[in-house]
Image (cartoon, rainbow, N blue to C red; front, top):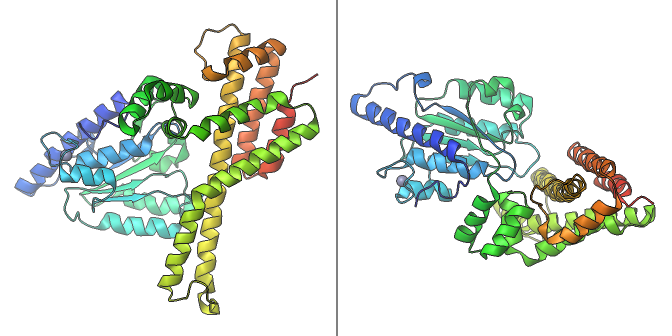
Length: 399
Ligand SMILES: [Zn+2]
């Protein structure tokens, strides 16, 4: 067992991280015995700033946390997974692994300033002070510029780990100061094995889930552990096929957006209520009492944060729906082209064959383009209902 067990299908990245953690250990030991500064970073497998990139669901934050653990590890080989520092770093309890993950659309300037303060401290118990930013792409340029200074000249024991979907998601000035580690889309087999081992999923179900989610680890887990998730997915993928009119398309769009909203709400409502109760308690208010004008700003700030979070959750749910729809029409197109690539939607083979027989490849291409267009619009803040309506109208079977 080691901290790398859950970093599935990423042999190259794990090799870089392991070499870095070994070099980091040598640097730290040298510093402790001789009091000498570390050797120049460019000659070492270890460096002070890392950019971990990889497509959504490839396990960026899991990989970054495993690397943080390996840096703190006191076991025989870095990242042993057995020692206390390893276990604490992986579970999020290590005092020298400071993690920023946001569910908001943007990381705020205040959050980044606090992080920079954390980066200036010496380690409490570990050898390194690791600052892990899970959504480094969610930063305004102004905020990034503040971060840049700290990344350029960190204290000798500080290590920055930034995670983004791709290297283009951060400013070139940041990118050029970080060593890049790129995760690939893990093989479906590796994802299925993880679900069986870690989540106790049934092997056959895990294999199906890994394939249907196109190796997105979080989604695969959702499909393998939540029986309703398959039904929702099937309803979504079958919806366009049964549309008869523009009116049907509009209704289908409304129900898809509504379902996304309620799924997003389910994910955030409990947390929202808890945060509000904590804040009112911290402000010394009765939970059902009136809020004095002087404290309204704080309550309003919380409400705005929660609204942003709900919006992001809804955007994420809709984007996942778009990815599922894309997989269906890619299967259809592959069937039309006579390709023998293995299908994503094995459980919907009949529907794929039917759609392939009743339309041509140019229609499938147009549908795929329409879904991509809808994704772009959803990401760029278009009204979700309008974007999805326009999509459904384009997806409906043409007479
Ligand atoms: Zn360890």
